[in-house]
Length: 159
Image (cartoon, rainbow, N blue to C red; front, top):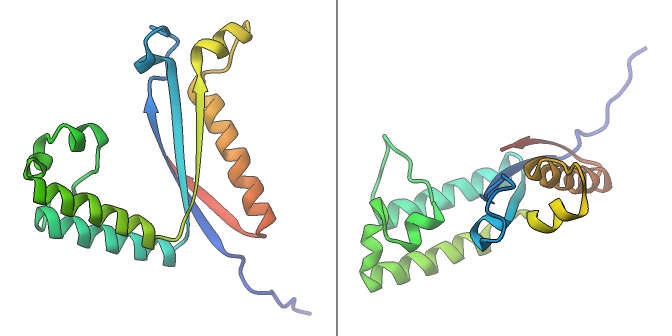
């Protein structure tokens, strides 16, 4: 006797990146006080592949083709016009970059979650606090897995 399987559940992938410092040092300085984890998840593979193609075309349009070294969009390099982003010193190129990036994001199909921790307050509240990165990651994965369960979907994570 064979069992018939229903359709495969939709599959998602969560991509995670952080901003800020994960240590409990220099907490009176705003640049060290907070840690944020940002997660975006796409239906894998279709929505993600559409986004990746759109993003690659956008970057190639602004910076030219870079087959040997992909261009990573680092906030600090973008706003300070460092390395490849030096071309953004020209107002018309920067405007094209900003408008184009917004259009790529508007067209993308994804969910987003951001977890921010005030490390100074966290350290004051708990005698032995979790590592800030682990704390944020646990909160994010809890949200993601809950969403997957709600949607009867499966997923994985890439940090």
